[in-house]
Structures are given as C-alpha cells and as structure tokens.
Figure (tube, helix red, strand yellow):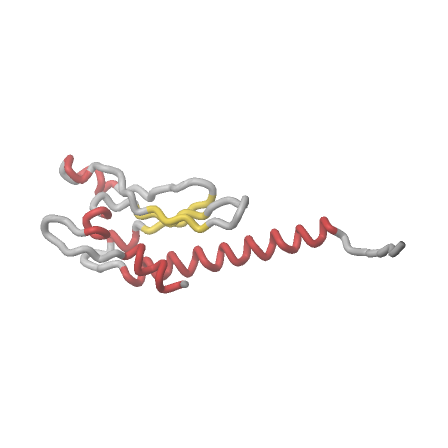
Length: 124
C-alpha cells in the first residue's frame, strides 16, 4: 500500500486562490471601466462621468440632471455589464445617464456608439 504524506494546507491554498481571483477580478473591472470611459462620446462629459463600478449588485450613479430632463428620459439605464468568477461576488459596470440607452444603442437623433460592447471587446 502506498501512502502519501503532505504538509499542504488546504485553507492556505484556498486563501491564495481567493486573493488571486479578487485581484484579477478587480483588474478586469478597472480595465473595463477605463475602456468604457475612453469609448464614451464626449459632448458635455456628463455621460462619461456616469460610469460606475459596484460589487454585489448594480448601482447607478444619479445626478440632479436626471430630474430636470423631460419625462421620456426618466427610464432607468439598462447599461449594465457584470464581471463574475464562479461563486465570487460579481462586479457591475453601469451607466446611470438618463439617455444612456440612446447613446449605447442609438436613438432618434444619434447613431449607436456601443460603448459597453466595445469596452468588453477591448479587454479580451
């Protein structure tokens, strides 16, 4: 019979893996945020400033400008990108600009910019 003796500490290995996953997830999330900001069109800088990173659930930045916009712009922004690794907490990139849908996918007066899609492609 063969017996193997090992001084490997499973808890230490799991702790190292957890730290590695957390570090890599943070790096990817920050790269994604930087790319989204870089690819965002700049008219006034407001759309660009509304990108937000959050952990666990999507959090949209809000701004008093939202409340001064016409009612057609009161819809929530669907611009949400999640970075996740297995059972670890997800990191969300969101844009809460009231007109984010129109910037991302196009609208009656502007072409689509596909900022989130371009940001994802740029870090792959």
